[in-house]
Length: 348
Image (cartoon, rainbow, N blue to C red):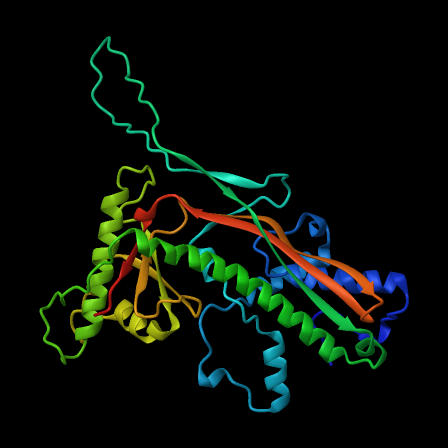
C-alpha cells in the first residue's frame, strides 16, 4: 500500500532515535506541502520541493462531478487519501506576503492616498510637490496551535493507516482554521457598507421567463464591478474596465446560480453577447456564514495577508500517556485597508 507520509513504514524503527527524527521530518514535510510559501527549514530539501510542485499541479478548486467517482471500494479509499479537502480560494483574493524568514511580529498596512494630479507646467514653472495623506495600521501576527498524539500501540501494531489518517485530519484542520480566519475578515466588511441591490434584468425580462434570474444576477455583478472601479479610480491601482479582473466569492449554496449568471447571454442563440461586462472568476467556499449573499471583489492590492510561521511541528514522547506527541503551530495575519475593493450583492 502506498502512503503519503512514509513510503515504507516497514522500514521504520519507532524505538530508534534517528528513525524518530526521520518520522518527524517526514511529517513536517507532509504538513508543509500546501503552504503557499516554502518554510525556511525546508528550502534546501529537494525531495520536499519536488513533492510540493507535484501537489501544486493537482490542486482543485471546483467540486467533483458524479463521473469523477471511482467504481471500487479500494479506489474510493485511495482517492479520499489523496485529495486535499481544505479550502485555499482566499489566496486568490488576499495578497499573501511571506514573512517566514523575518523576525517581525506583524506588518504595516497603509491606507495612504497621495492626492496627486498632473497638470500643464508652463515654461519656467516648478512642479508642485503633493503631500501624502492617509493612515497606517499595524497588523499583528496571531499564533494558532494544535496537538496530535500517536499512541505507541499504533507503531507496535503497525497500524500505519491510522497513523496517516490522524496526520491527514490534523493538516486539514490546520488549513481549515487558516481559511476560515481570512473569510471571516472579508465578511466583517459587510457591517461597514450597504449591499448592492438585486438589479433589474437589462432586457426587462419578466419573472418566470428563461434567464430572468441569471440576467438579474449578472447585471448586479456589473453594477458591483462598476461601483468598485469608480470608487478606486484615484487610488493608483492602475485598473481599467479593459484590464481588470474581479473575483466572485460565493457560498456553496449559490454555486449553481453564480455559474448560470457568469455564462448568461442576452439571447439563447449561439454568438449572442454576454450580459457580463467584466472579467469575473468564481471562488466557491463552504466557509461563509451568510449564504444568501455573494461578493464581487477587486483582489490583492490593499487586501493583504502575511505568513509569519508556516505550519511547524515540535515533537516529544509523553511517558504519562505513552504517546508520541506532535504539536503544530502557525502564525499569520491579514487586513483590508480599502473596503472599496469589496461589494456584497443581494440575490432578491
